[in-house]
Length: 253
Image (cartoon, rainbow, N blue to C red; front, side, top):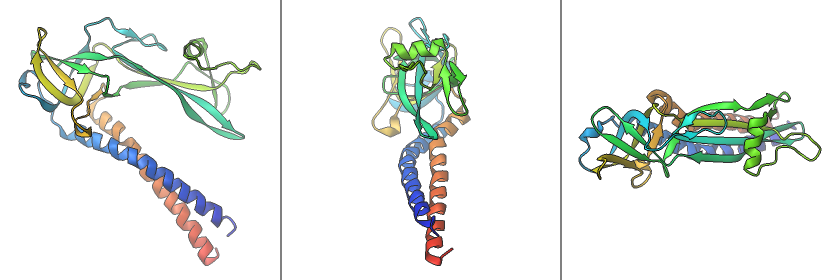
């Protein structure tokens, strides 16, 4: 009975957190449903502005970028770094850095036309490698090798503390590589200019957001909707805790 108060509060806090995550998850679920419902079109058939989905091979007018952690050639890359924040006997990873490069890419679907994808305001969901540049330092924490440490230090993050110990970071890198099969869903403008390219860009509102991904269709839909599914589990867990604590207090269990 003594624990019912703290458990009730913890359950309520868990539900509030889940509701906040659920709001973001609803947007992800809408994106997933859009990916599943919009049929894939052929670029050669685009004659008027329209919201379409296309799939083809990725390339670029320019030389590929070099992904900073793995050295892989990339048309687009995103690096994320999370720092381990200790709170006594436990802790958690907190986002410390998110960096993306890649302004556009070309897509060829074999129909005789190509598309220019403008990535500046796109939602790019790329294949990701996690746990890069890491050496295990404890049960939960990790340290970085020289590549990871140099990358973070070049961006103004402190890796080595004055006492010689190293802060713990977790790095991940996602890329779209030359030749990848890419899916794109957005607002298409008919071919124009000497290159006769169909231009895909974000349209009006979230219903015409430009989604670009090199994940297979089913995996992309699952990835976009995973936040919603996770939030529901947390919400149910919080509700069970709060309800159980309330019952214990009311009936003296």
